[in-house]
Image (cartoon, rainbow, N blue to C red):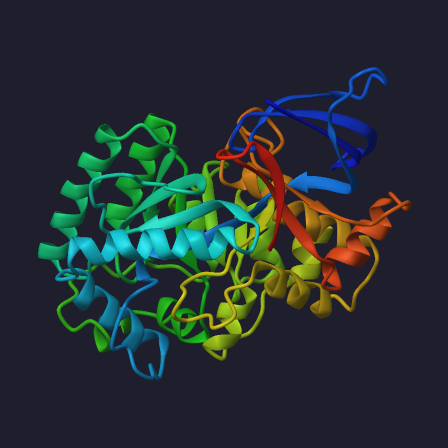
Length: 395
């Protein structure tokens, strides 16, 4: 056991001063309490502690995808992924997961919402934690049935936080998506779906009497649904508080009002949106309506930055650095991100790693936000099990 005395601890309700953390040999929290003034033999950290960061939407299985080349548009990318995933060696997926998790860990990201279409035999997480969403993606009956069968195996075979990912309503039949949502509700599982990611998607969705996706997926036999907005989709599929919508770039204020009414959460991936030359969602309206939101980096191949703080700063820039939004964005990266993923841990509970930003002598929320969004040095606190020493790893 190791003891760490810290100057301040950040929580959404405010900053707590002079806290004692008892850690196990891996640097994970065993106990958190107010420093009693008596305990000795501790390591002192003069800074503000907060939970490790949450990357609420990513695809780490794609970390080592090879021979991608220059992808001209999202649709070519989707076709390439669908084609290659079917023959991608299991060992490659294992390597991708290990490599991807270590990449995020080096940024202070220890909690992820990871979408996976292929599930090699464990470990499902190696150095991080979070929730795995098994992806149903298949624009042909053959692919679709294989995915549904694999999903059933996944849901019954592993003891981890899990969920279902419906890739989109242009790669999954509307009727299948409806059945999956009903099944997830019965099993108490969250559902994650890409929705409103591109202008082209919107144009095809809302054409009258035409299945526009035939142009992209000629073998697609999906039914044509009479919809006129993303709000229509939400209501026809009975999305609810167990639903997590990703991107929402093309959503109108009216669509977001329906999101709020149904208690739906969203994940924003602004750097990925810009990569594809798309618009950005209405960040200001999302935060003003107090919609639950988190931030994700999306795919390693479509986001060259893959740095959660860059995504956060892009959101902050988009709302003109207004002071009232700093806290909302910071909470989305830490506490609220876990809530969006339906993870019970707050990030500073038992058996958690944690991070610290060193800001000596001034322990205010404003000082924390200023340092965090302006490149302040963040450290992941761990223990060296060989020599029993506490060490700080800059992330």
